[in-house]
Image 1 (cartoon, rainbow, N blue to C red):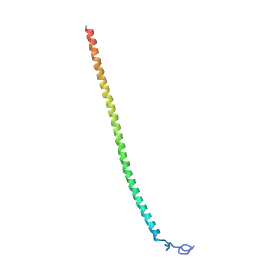
Image 2: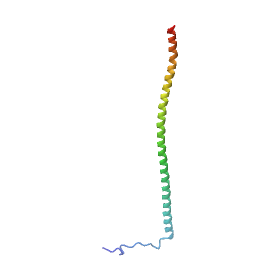
Image 3: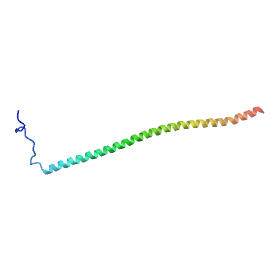
Image 4: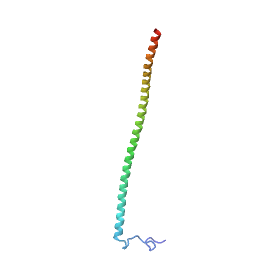
Length: 104
């Protein structure tokens, strides 16, 4: 086995051919990546807030649908009662006139 410092395993070092422009470009690219990640995090947080609002709206719509079903049932009961009262009023004069004819 060869030792790690032998020519076969050279140690890592920077070459003088690496320019300042390359280092600056890498730094700018890294900073841009961090800015992009920060904006992506903000967008995700905003979308999560909107999703929570939509969930609350969905629950509210479900409650309103239930209330409208109860109101519809109450309206049907009221209409039936009115129909019965109107039907009774229409039948009463006929019964009274029939009784008046029988008395004569």
